Image (cartoon, rainbow, N blue to C red; front, side):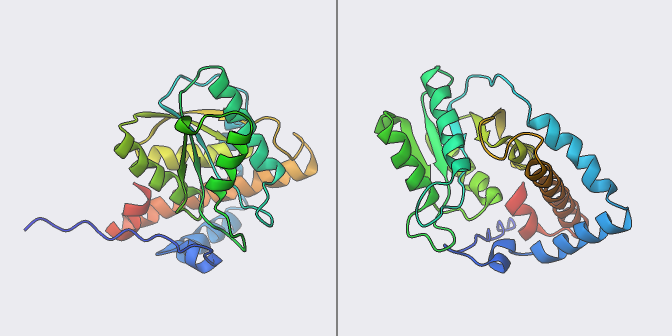
Length: 235
């Protein structure tokens, strides 16, 4: 008999940090952290170059849909970062880059509203037709955003995406999308805070560089130990 596909772990709504980590998450985090310390930050600074390159202005290719990555709400209200992502996606839609906008994000933290639904309402209040709007409201973090988006694309028959997020987030999003076999181009929301090259911006850049290193560490570790369950989440 053919081997059954492994059950895919997904975090529950309002998941705790440990629940979001999922199978292998904690050990790969510790491996990424330990390697960064032992190699005096070299892996993080290596990934920093990728983070900075992905943050630059680009002109995305036309696609089946524009994907807006969700962002944790504050008392069911959109943060300035999330608004900047949505505003940029709306501009791309108005310019004709794609006929559809897909917003991701489930109920996170203490919110009663999903990130995707909050984003959908914001866009429709600004004139986006309901027929052009799609949501994915199960995911708890970036990797799950993309995993469930892949399932949505298969249902809709979509082949290509424009990824929209704040500039420093995009390198990690692109790496995860590539790992899942998605065909994408990127469009950074350049107006999203923090201000470019500010102290907070550089702190965020280094944080994203470590998270990108962690992602690649997790993929490598899962392949090394041959864990079908862990690889099923990222490939």
